[in-house]
Length: 319
Image (cartoon, rainbow, N blue to C red; front, side, top):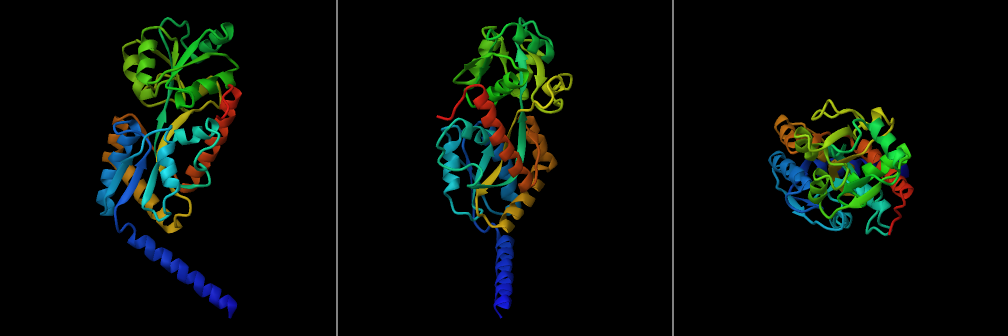
């Protein structure tokens, strides 16, 4: 009798979950973005949200909560009800923060359920034309011959550009000097002006400077060559295993019902892979790419562990 009751209860719960997923969503969804309006993440979210609104028949509202390296927005979502109506634009920055901040107001792994990635962002290693290196191998040889003399710019410690330089130092056993800037635009100005020799911009943001010859791209941080600059090799071709990427995806609070996560996943994958949306995302500098919740979770876990290890190796400890 007890076994029968438990079996009936399980069937009832499964039926309730199924009915919940079929009626989801029945009111507007709040999509929290931890960056300011007009930034790359905001543009991605708004492009996708507009199409989601049409598919769901409910408004998907982008709510910008910038600040503290996207931690403010993440903290809001971590504490929200696990009902599928509050989303977070998870980013590669969230996988870097645990290696920089000792006491986060949430646990990146335990407090969220990843749904799918939406886009990936790839970076590049570029130098001013006066730097005597025309390949990654030549650059590494130059850095070894002149330890501590090459300066590389980024938008700050803990950014993906910083991580690109840090991982290169660790894997190639070289020493460069990191020069953090308050804004990546200032870093570009100094790099183009020859005041700093090395920079790790996103492929898209670096492209105009590569076309004019103001900066020389030596390699891309993705495992394979990038379609925007196919003649530029991957750094991994000279340094096997090297890879740095950032990404934007959808997270929800941990404990969100599985059927709702599956419903979200199916719709997001459909929308992101719609030709018009893919074209729009590529045009603004990203590479559309979806995955399963489990694949996305494994990626995040891997990057959190890898990033913390790299940061420690170059002397960055959580503060």
